[in-house]
Image (cartoon, rainbow, N blue to C red):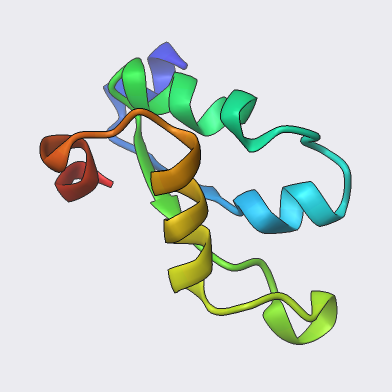
Length: 78
């Protein structure tokens, strides 16, 4: 995490895809919030919606807003 933060790398996060693939069972405990709180830049994305029959990125954004305790500053950063 230190290298990612030092090099200012943005990490792509696919919350709903992770849920469908069972990499995460509860979005409230998704690693994205830990990375965000550690100062790592994250980008919410919908991982190949055609393949997984998922919804657009707006639904991943809603999932993050619903699952994480974010304020307006956090939302702007993400």
